Image (cartoon, rainbow, N blue to C red; front, side, top):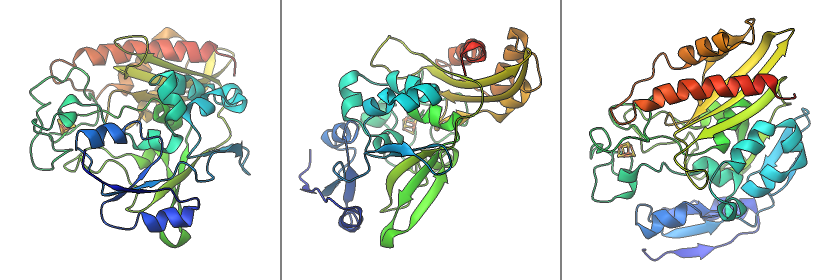
Length: 328
Ligand code: SF4
């Protein structure tokens, strides 16, 4: 690990000012950043610890939703009674991520900024456009069992590792950012993360020096909510495929639906095609299969990850069925 300086401001304005210098970086829980620093994939010269800033509250928003401070731990978020009862899909997704110890330490803001777990990104002897733009991508012809089947490019086929972000995508969450001179910006979660294109090293639309201060949830949509994650082992493992589904039905007919996928793309993948295939249709497995086919019509495997297309299809169907029968 390279040497760095460290400070822990107690006010947001001080943190923004401290992070303005070249080589500075925010740190909160550090559950991903410290690993990256040990491997010298990230080499900040100055760390600005924002974990003590007063952004650790979950409170009702004026619009009838919820405002979640960026420094709220993943554990506190999952355990919050309002989240568990009104935004069950979010609580389920957070609990499905990482381990208990990591969830105690990891912050909501940090969860959104965690880097991919593509093994070539962490192997400094491998070619990786995300770590070193222009170097190439060893995953294209290499070990790509966990890689993207949607929205990938010839520059990068990595996936976003967050479970929380998939549920937030289904809930139409908004990310609140604070920048220089106290400027506040609100970015829909669906626009916060980027597809790789030819710049996979730019993963979000956060501007230099901006800090996440909160995630804002609108009032929950109607219907039952369910998050389902399929992975190689039952705990402490990233998703091969995950699905966040919210389904409302009346008299056996679907009146509203949300479908978001994780483990399949460079960003949380909300499927408008699947949602269109569900609304005003009977809440049957035949409809769920049509929705899954719509969600995956553009899916493309790279060899070892071909199985994820069928896995995603089955996971979408099962999760939609569970959401349709879940208590709203
Ligand atoms: Fe790097 Fe992306 Fe290729 Fe992985 S898939 S090696 S992160 S460029």
